[in-house]
Image (cartoon, rainbow, N blue to C red):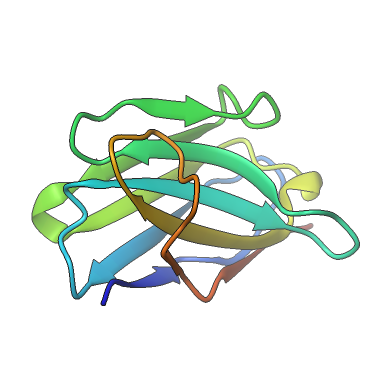
Length: 122
């Protein structure tokens, strides 16, 4: 039973930085693809970044490329999303999801976290 918990969200000013974490328990993430998604009110869920935990391959969406960086710490069984140069339009609930397999992004996630709110406002 793989469980994911996001943390690190909060209120940040435009131009600021925040790092959100996805911490796993129950299984090692070594053989998983982990995706970061976000959803704002009235908007469809957006895939923003992914990582293959085993080999480090990543995907980053155009909307956040150059500002957001996904990484993993295998020793801590965790994946992170470093968010820099934050904009008000980045305001959303951020979720992580895991899919077992040799992928970069999840295809059919077996686990989702509960989400963490990121609000970018002055």
